[in-house]
Length: 93
Image 1: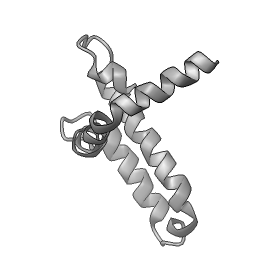
Image 2 (image 1 turned 180 degrees about the horizontal axis):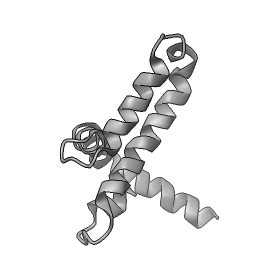
Image 3 (image 1 turned 45 degrees about the vertical axis):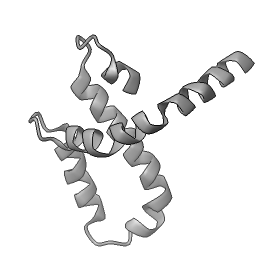
């Protein structure tokens, strides 16, 4: 999904690809922190509001904000290592 977002062809649904990248990162982070977070009184309501904000059809939605401020810089910093690992796995497969 990140490769599709960063491609020069913008005919794909960049908004939804951005949402799915942010949602995937959120699910991975949540799997580690869920043991502690579900004890907070309005955790599930806050989670629902967060996901609605990420899907909102406005330019400042959560997916765009989080992707461009956190996920994209981290990916651009480490994309060569990720590509090397993926190519190593594909050659072994």
